[in-house]
Image (tube, rainbow, N blue to C red; front, side):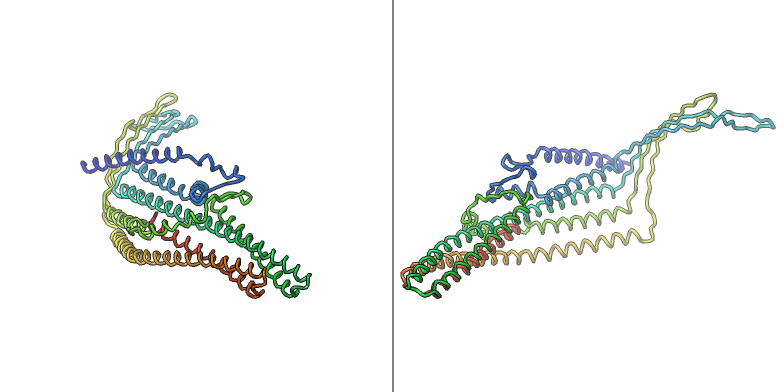
Length: 453
């Protein structure tokens, strides 16, 4: 009996603490500002000017998939309270009214019959009951683990969203930068077209030279138009992540060089890897904890179930007579002990032991793989950074070569073929530069998510 009382006290203490915790969490969520004064709701957004950090915060606030992940955490808290409440006192009330429509019961005694009128009766009943077993308490522990896993999933979703916003944000900046370079190149080559056309009219140059320059102008125009479409596509992808209407005018206030900071890459590569900080590892660790708790629950299937009940009944007779057969107050205490299940409970314990071994093996394997994955991600970021620096230098060189070829062509010091080659090299350099930027950003995002920065 002392153990039963201690078990009840434990449940009541846990329920009080967790009920307060759930309400504190709900209050915190209710008091959290929905947005900054500069970040309006979806229906009010006509234009937005965002830095990279502001874009990430805005996406976290507005993205509906992330809101669903946050709601899943609140749902887990509600499920835990249901489990706790099932072990706390349950009170039910009832009222019934019986009308026998004038019926009289006949009682025969010693050859004599007596009629007893059956009066109308109203009955009020109140029942309070409480059932408690160790499996219920273990169930609360399982709910706690489920809440932690939901929180980790929310954190992981937020980290992935921030990384996606950064990739899209930088993509727009890179494409805008290339578009600006192409515009300046077009101005130069259009000037050459005008000079060549005048030379043809004056008889100082052949028509084929003018035609070749015109082809280069059209090629650059096509490249510029393609870049504009790419910018629009990248911007729309960013709007999807921000969860704003496609009509929203979006302005990015960040500078590409500031986003692609060498110091940030170097500091990231210099960080020490702690496997405990990795979100995938934390989720797997929680799965191991859940498997252990499930094993405990299966073992407690052999434990007793203690039930307490109190019943109050009050009858009111309307009319003459009436015989009260039901006591007004009844207290019941029962203990149910499982004795034989044909091996069902034993098989359940074996099943949970196997599940625990599987979870532990998965965790050990993942721990080894995470160390290898960390090295690979560092290699990827290092290679991407070196490629970016090379392509950045390459585009500067290509830009100077094109400018030199343009000036030489003006004064007849270079051929049309040299100008065409310089133009092609510049376009190719711009394309590979964009790819190098995107590869660098993606490698950086992947490592940051891995390290849970």
